[in-house]
Image (cartoon, rainbow, N blue to C red):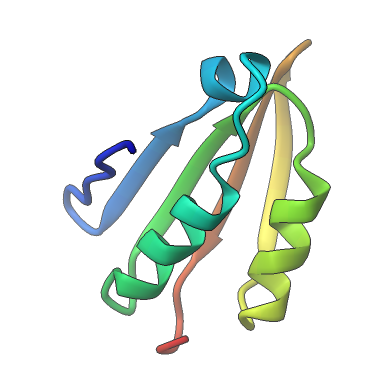
Length: 84
């Protein structure tokens, strides 16, 4: 289990290698998001768009923006605005 950290209200989580190894840390990320304080900015690095993770963020009332940094490297950004 990874330890995710928040620094200056920002959590940068790079799960590209884990996902490429076949791991699915979605539940771990969601538990971290739920425990994080309101106002936390999440920056999650993925090897693909991460549609299931985007849908989960949206179901928690968070907007998620995804940018392709380079082929095989996507960045999902979201801000926790309310307790979930």
